[in-house]
Each structure stands twice: as structure tokens, then as C-alpha cells.
Image 1 (cartoon, rainbow, N blue to C red):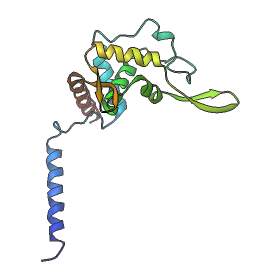
Image 2: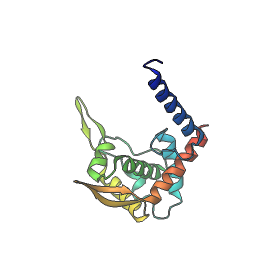
Image 3: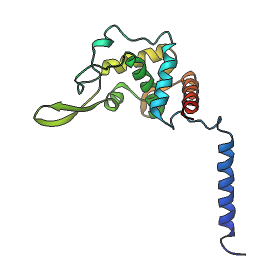
Image 4: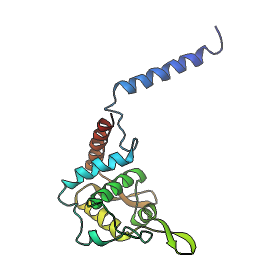
Length: 171
């Protein structure tokens, strides 16, 4: 009997546990893992059917941040941004408008001067969060010293359903 026999048993147990998780993929679907682009596309399609989430009248004319030169080219950009905000809120936990502005910001071209960071549009993020809150997908909460918006169980189920569709489409 060698001193490594205990390690082999532990390795066998880990392999066995990994095979069990592969055998039952429905329980282990994590909406935050996988391809975020596909998940957001499927989630945007689901959000189009939600009555409370609709693009404001000014949406076709607005830029998504100071760092952008033109408005978005896609017609359904509002639903895609709302889906992205929902996924980000799920990922980051209690989050507010300020942190999301930083998340959706980018480099601002200043001509010959060096580029600097510019935050994303606060109005777009605020309206998206308000619509998600009206739809019952997001709620305000405090976790320790952090306060902001977190997803609800309804949103968690919607994310899991969209993640399942995205996985099936990838196969």
C-alpha cells in the first residue's frame, strides 16, 4: 500500500462527481456562464413580450453615452440594452445607476488630445431599471453596506429559461 492511495481515491471521487453533473445538465444550468451574447439575444426576445418594457419615444435619436458618435443602428437596441442590464444586475448583485454607467461607458475621443473614460448614459440605465422594476424583474434591496437593485425570483426563472434556449441553440 502506497502513501498515494488516498489521493487516488479522492481523484476518483472528483471524477465521479463531475460525471454526475454532466449526466444531469438541467439542474446545473447557470445563466451567467456560457455565451453572454446569445443569452442576451434570447432574453431580449423574451422581454419584447413583457408589456411594461418598451422603448421611449426618444430612443431612435439618442446616443448610448457621451463616448459614442452615433445612435445604435439596430431597431431593437432598447430591448437588448434592458436584457443586458438585467444580466448585469444578476451578476453584480445590489447595483445602482452609477456603477452601471461605469459598466456601459467607454473611451471618449477628444480629437488630438488623449482619450479619456466617459460614462454611459444615465437616463437610459435609469429608465431601463424603472421598467424592469415595474415588470417585477428587479427590486431594491440592501446587502450589508451595499444598496441597489437585485433580481427577483421571476427574473431568475426568466434568465434560466433564456440560458436553456441559448444552450440548445448552440448545440
